[in-house]
Length: 135
Image (cartoon, rainbow, N blue to C red):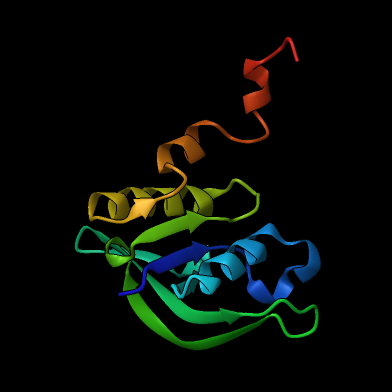
């Protein structure tokens, strides 16, 4: 049985393929015969105490012209995915915070969340440097 990865990211059609690290990760995941579910933060919701998303199966390609193909939208219980990756770029806004709360629920429900939701909330990439003034 192959692994099911959920990748939460900005709109895939707006990335710059030749330099996008999320696309590179998805290519590596796909090479290992894993299923990838593409999720945008706006498509995450909570119902009856569990996190879900309107996600899409995605196939990715190492191409600058045609780098992805998406399937139809499906409702995915996030806790049933094997691994979740939060790859959303800033801004750090309410939608982002809500997504991290939903990831807490997915983690509780059994998904491995690669980047801990509490760390995403508490250690903002723009502020964390303040903890290291000597640098």
